[in-house]
Length: 626
Image 1 (cartoon, rainbow, N blue to C red):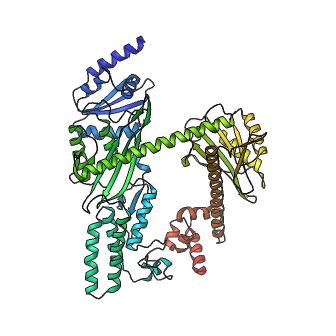
Image 2 (image 1 turned 90 degrees about the vertical axis):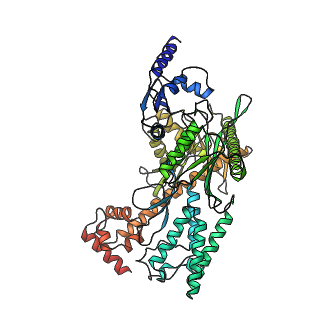
Image 3 (image 1 turned 135 degrees about the vertical axis):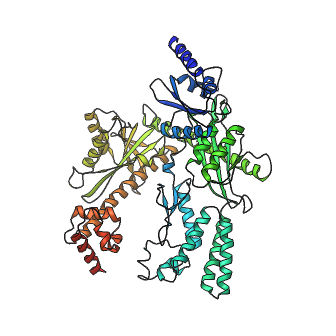
């Protein structure tokens, strides 16, 4: 207790000696880890507050964990705001609001430098001269937007390469049903195609209305010049854009262009948290909600509406992070909550500088803008409520599973294994992981079985599990986590074999087998001695059934991919001078057999590990084949 008092006194003295200048402060715990990063226009005034007076529970908890702090002074408050955001990304402190890493967000990319640009999805933004739009909330949203653009503007969706493939093959079914402009026919020149791509870029920038006006003028001009086929294309594109608007939710007139951020704060049911803080963001373009996103806050993060003073609002850091990686920022950002005037102006100035045009951040009090904010708040509250209900149901299911299987702990991490093979070839064991009852694909792993000859499921499962166990508990190892429960796609003998192997390694992890019925559906779990009927426990049954189906799907898909690669490389090995290593190098460089077939001699020579003689042999082989 005396040590704690001494440390508080030390922190008070140190904070009292800070300069009254703008800057960033970095809080450390006793182990030296960064636990909180904040910014202030007066470091002394802000940091001192943490060690004097009362605070809300989460801020008090953070302050009590501080063992020491350091600070960085800045010339301006805007510089401090940018530095704070950068340090939060660098350290991901325990008590700061943390958004998903921008690297994982999907973007829409248009390779505008190409003569025949395509619209694609990417997770990497590189300074290659291409146009990038986003980030978007999910890959589903990105693919939906791309599909709508391709359908509306009749952009080719095939994998043909232009201009190389123009006139080589007959048009595909999409051209025949009016879904493609038919570049492959040779009747569309590159300038006309690029004009369509530029229209797609304008739509992605939010200019749907301007594109419709431009297309209408082009349609009338083509009609006056008696080019009725071109006029019909413009007409169909206009209809498609209008239908695209009808599918989206209209929330304002066509000139409404803004982002709306609604905040639903924590609800308490007595002493217990009922729902978490949640922010809902509507990205409104041309009067329609083009995309939306939800951000849930909870755990140790300092509450959004904490007792921070005016120049250190957690909401400012959240908004800063939200727009740090966005390619396009509209001229107006509407907030459902009041931001301290100083922070609001600072954020507005920073975003204005970043976007290159004036950005207004405001909290509307009435009218259509207020209605949009209220709608975002309602959406945030509903999302928080639904998430809380789902998490409670998942927790209840895991408790029921632990009770049914008589486990010592609730299984927060479940690993499931399944063997897949084609005869004695490509024996593969797939591992899928469920954390807190939800599948976590980033934790999936594949084991290519090498030690068994022929179809030996027991030997294959033993090899896979022994390799998995060898990683547990190791530092800086992606498979170091200990599972609370292991599920095998197999029966009593599978369980007994793996339990004996694990006992030899000194591990005591519960292992159960998932048995299927004659319809290949989950029937029971086995523990090596008898069967446990889970059919009467609907929630447990759904969880186990989902895991068993997923591990089977995953193991089969990995085995099939391995087989497909072998088939591709084996076909290349028919070419004189090309062995397994060179075949693998070719596939790695070009990606597909078709790309290798269509490659020029110079392109083949540029592939790593391929000599000029090899390139000539490959080129002649496929030239004769054609």
